[in-house]
Image 1 (cartoon, rainbow, N blue to C red):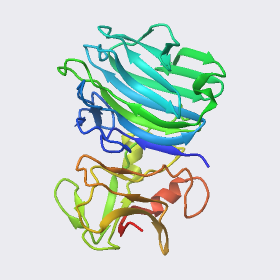
Image 2: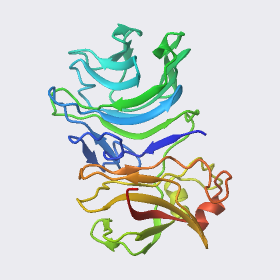
Image 3: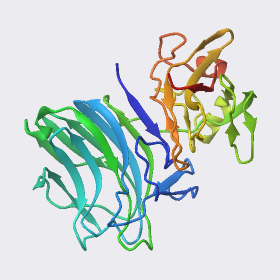
Image 4: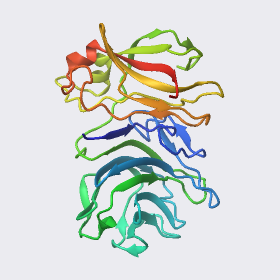
Amino acid sequence: MSFMYVNPGYKGLFDIVDNTAVESTDVTFNNNKIAFHSTFNSNVNTDSIININSNEVYIKFDIYISAKGLCGADQTFLKITSANNTIIFNTPRNQYYYFIIKNNGSLLSPNINITNGLNTFIVHVKTDNILEVFINKLLVYQLYSTSILSGEQISKISINSSNFDNTSYNYLSNMIISDTDISGQQIAIVPVKTTSGSWTAGGNGVYTSDTLGQQLLQTLDIDSLKANMNVQGNVDYKSLSIAASPGYCDTGNLNTLKTIVKSNASAVNPESKQLTQNVNAGIYTQGLVINPLTGAPWTETDLRAISVGLESAEAS
């Protein structure tokens, strides 16, 4: 079954969180009004990491390059790792407007130029024969080789947007990772239409739960979604992701969240995620590429009829 990771630009929606990361709601950096940047620290690992298990992966993300360019400090901004091999996208020291690609330390690519402003990357890796890189829909690098990651399964994706002097920043957003081609897909944050359930509401959209089995349910405002996307006709809905950022627990027994998809009397819990006590962390779930209530691809009728949300639980 295909997998899909989706993150509009929240710093907490990773398996390993960069605790130095800072978010911005400036539309300059992302039309979804959420993006984040890392903070350069040569003594601390500031990577944001997603764990996967696949021989083929498509990685799509937007990066807003500041007027000072990329890091310029021999910094790796994207890393694709298997058990014994690593592909890195690296900005050499004192070079701000190009990057190179290495495989286990050996140079693969010539200098690849990049300009300041918003850039969309698509990286396609098949571990036994292909590496492709697109920037703003243009193919900038392609390699066919059986030595790419030696055919090993990819185990994690690491990303880092820090800049050497920490006086200007590069912002990351709109990240999709999947084992199927996602080059034509885009991320949209669905506005909430109604909220119900037994969680306690706080300020700024914060909700808390202190009792096992409490649910937080929200319906989706599809009309507002389409208006925000400036779409008049039909939309091809590829997946639905349920996430919370931040999302963490205290020292009590409630340390797990179950996702909920509900329609009338039917309800399912597609996934459970164990929380940490890191206040910078969030929770993300696999993008639901099919409607778990019907077993079929999503339709607009489905999305208008469902509630989605979270249920508090204890780790088993």
